[in-house]
Image (cartoon, rainbow, N blue to C red; front, side, top):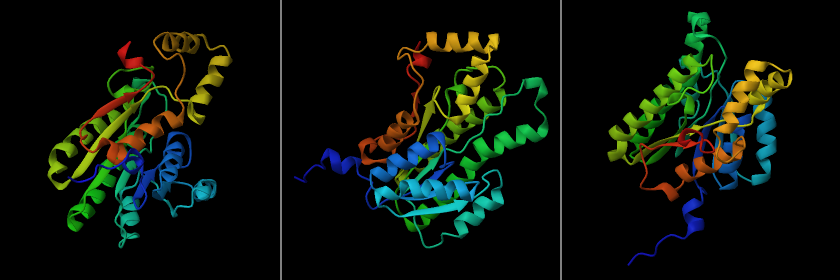
Length: 267
């Protein structure tokens, strides 16, 4: 009888190469740190070279190989160019984390903003998955995709985010469709739906609350009332679930859409 792998072997990503988009701040940076600590070599994507360099320097303590690429993920041509720049590498893991969430009333969203939100939040994940799966199938190798969605995809949380929620609902559909179509190729695809997570972006919203914006005070109060765990999440809370999905701990898991939201959607 074959010896079963140990827990430490199941969680280890040593020898794996992981791509993380939107990797220089917030949830993306937390994911990069967690995967590096588990032993994965990393390819980090973000728009700004300076932020990528700073993140790579911070991650250097983990003694893994780190490559950085400045890519505007709203541009399909730049995504294609990125894949053309790594022709001899075969990534094992793809984490589609990049996202923007500009608050705007539904009736004030113009075509330019709508397109930008779709391009960054949904279309970038679509094309990153496209090239990732294409490369894995050509090499006949297994792989693993983790898409970062949002609870906005299933339960609208805040006014002014309809465009964002639509894009993230598309990420859920993309996840489930790819899981069905490419399971035979041993490509697993799962999604995480973060709830309220304390990042630079949410801190800006908290600043508005502290300026006594009464509408936001009410929203903030209602939000906390629905949180069984009674706190905002941290990037590391999401990153640890990414590690589970990216590792062999979840070897029989695909097409799953898992809220990591402090219990918000269950209450």
